[in-house]
Image (cartoon, rainbow, N blue to C red):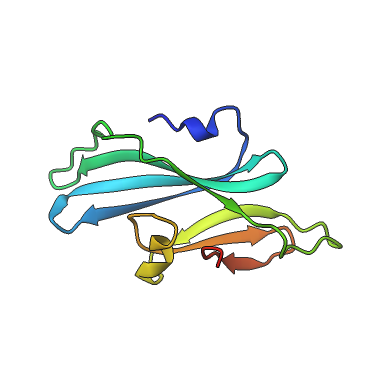
Length: 129
């Protein structure tokens, strides 16, 4: 599926999350969360992988996405340790996290969005206030 925000960008890391629509439990929606650079900044882009994959009868064929549904978020890096040359290197989503954590990023999927750094820190992200 197209994800134009990633054109010409080198991904650093990616994670994937899927959820089922409570109104249609036989359908599954999946997105990739891709960590990448935008100039000297870091961003996470959500790229829908499918919309409404049929999981009820074992059919693994993805259906066509309705709209592109691509979202990107710039990650502020002023909290990183400059003296240690700390950088963000990984992204993960914990599907067991609070439902409002991913909703803050506009994701229709539930979970906590996390990043890992080169100094082995794991940080849960939230929207800038």
